[in-house]
Each structure stands twice: as structure tokens, then as C-alpha cells.
Amino acid sequence: MRHALSGVRVLDLSRVLAGPWATQMLGDLGAEIVKIEKPGAGDDTRGWGPPWHGEGENRRAGYYLAANRNKHSVTIDMARPEGQALIRRLAEDSDIVVENFKLGGLRKYGLDYDSLKAINPRLIYCSITGFGQDGPDAAKPGYDLMIQAMSGFMSVTGEKDGPPHRMGVAMVDMTTGMNAAAAILAALYQREKTGEGQHIDIALFDVAMAGLGNQALNYLVSGTAPGRTGNAHPNVVPYQPFETADGWIIVAVGNDGQFARFAALTGHGELAEDERYRTNAARVENRDMLIPPLVEAIKTRTTAEWTEGLIAAKVPYGPINTIAEAFAEPQARHRGLSYETDGVPQVASPLRLGASPPPEGKAPPVLGEDTEAVLAERLGLSTDEIERLRDGRVI
Image (cartoon, rainbow, N blue to C red; front, side, top):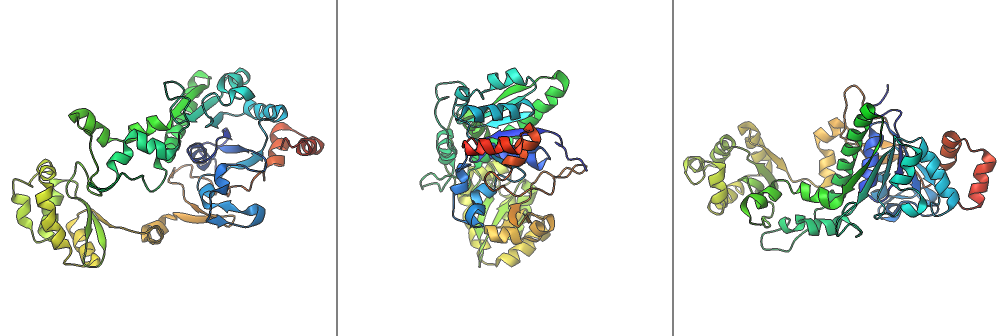
């Protein structure tokens, strides 16, 4: 069965997370990904452990394994003219290049967009940087944590009277990868009509600002910057965790009907008739009076009892799981959200196309494991030529 991106060739010059996340998504859709890595070192995240999987030359950090399945690892020293020539030859018959070097960092190697466009006008070239290709901050490096801080994300994350917090994962990097993949797919579609490739400019800062979503518009509409609200929602009430007699649950009331049923379940059905709480807008205005009696009511029953009641009342809820508990959820098991490929654990791709499901998958590669095969098959190099390149430390 052909996959959605079967026959599409991607040259991956990126490392760490945002770029590799984008190319992994393309690989999950069936594209052929050739990941260029520095000989002897490779992607920085290969060393971002513990924890580790495997031993010796096969040892790979869990962080690296998260973003590099369905790729072929080719080690080439792009600082060497011979290495640059090899990469240009690979770009010549590729559809897509993804890179996340600092602004203009690949120009000195002749691997920038203008240089590669000259040999492959159909090339779609995606540059991922901290701040984009122009502007006063364009030359600055960008890392997920600093972008979370600069974009305002940390100002709305954490307890109301506590310090700002980062998100528990590098969500700016990952959403940047997702946006990059979406832009690349759009460019592929456009190329079908025009026959021409293009340069895509994706910035972590832009993505983070767009990702503020309702909080950004809360500010733009009101002129007042929102602050931290802990685990409570700034615009919907009640929409937060509650402590039970033996644990915690999330209650996510999304409309007034759900609130009426929830209030009745807690023994406070009168709250739904109170003008201070009848509508969501009123509940947001008066949350400080509404929440305390609900908190006390929910403490009186166990998580299991509330689970049964909330299901029956059709009120959205959920347990606060550890990651281990999340993978043990019956739904996670049914959907096969964790699996192994070549003995390496992975999290299943969420991209489930009915007519062209994701491929079984190739495990995240050991450093350089595909160098000889790719150079021989894609570039037609002989065994002797490959050995000379290896002896000269080009590969």
C-alpha cells in the first residue's frame, strides 16, 4: 500500500527538536528522510540522557528516540568541501530540505536556499530559526525555554501568587515542528500547480505568539495582560482540578447545561439558578464565591464515586494520570499508542489516514548506520569511493 508521501524525498539538515519533529511527521506519512549528521557526534540530542536505550554504539537517549523514527542517518562533514558537494548532490534530487541553523549559517557552505534553488528549482526549503529571517532579533539564537519566556507563555503558567513556570515539555519546539510540516505540505500542493518550490520561514517566536490563542486575544481585546490562574481556566468556570476523598480529578464544564448537571451532582443544584452563576460569563466574574462550596463537596466522595456520577451526568471529566497511568489507560492500549519497532519503544503517530495509514516504521537510527547505503543507492558511489571518503574523514 502506498503511503500519503510515498516517493517524496526529504533532506534533513536539522537537529535537536523543532526540525526533527517536522521531518519525523513527514516520515510518518511515508516520505523518505535522509538525516545528515556530523561524524562522531551526530544530533545533539543523542547525548541528552539518561535515560538511554541500548549500549555501546547502539546507545541512544530517550530524547533522541522521541523525534527521529523513520529516518536514515548519514554522517557527512559539511565543513569539508567534499562533504558540501555530497549534500548538494542529495539536495539536487530531493523534494524538501529542512534546516535549523542560525540565520545565514548555511550560506558559507553553499547550502542555503539560493544556492540549492539554482540546482533544483522545485526544491521546498524550510528554515526554522528562533526569530525568523528578518527583524531586529533575527540573528539571535532561539531555544524553547527562552521563547516560552519572551512570548508571554510563562507569564500565564503557574499558580496565581507563585513564580512563572515553563510547560512540562518543549511545546514551542514541537508546535513549531508541526507548523513547519503543515507549511511544507502546503508548498508541496502548490508545487503541483506551479512546478516551483519555495523558501519557508518558520520562527519559534512567531509560533509561540500564535499559540497563545485565547490568551493573546484576551489581551488584544481588553488591553490588560492576563496573569497566572494556576490550573483554572481564564475564560471558562468551573474548568479545573478538584481534590476528591482519595485523589484528584479534572472537571471541564463547557456550557451552562453541563454546569446545572454538575451543580446538582454536588448537592448544590441551587447554584445553577443563582444569577451570579447561571451563565459562564457570570461564573467567570464570580468564580471566587462559586468554587469554594464545590471544592468542599467534591472532597466528600472518592474518585471512583465521582467518576461514576460524572459519567452518568454527562459532565466532562478526567483523572490526573502519571505518564505511566496514561499509557495504561484502556483507550491508549486500544489505540496502540505505545509500540516497539526493531526493539525500540515509540509513541504512535497521531496521523491516521484511512486510505494511507502510516508505515510500520524504522527505528530511530544509530549514528551513521545508513551512510554507505544512501551514498551508493542515491549517488551511485562505489565501494572504493566511499572508503576514500571515510579514510579522509568526510563521512
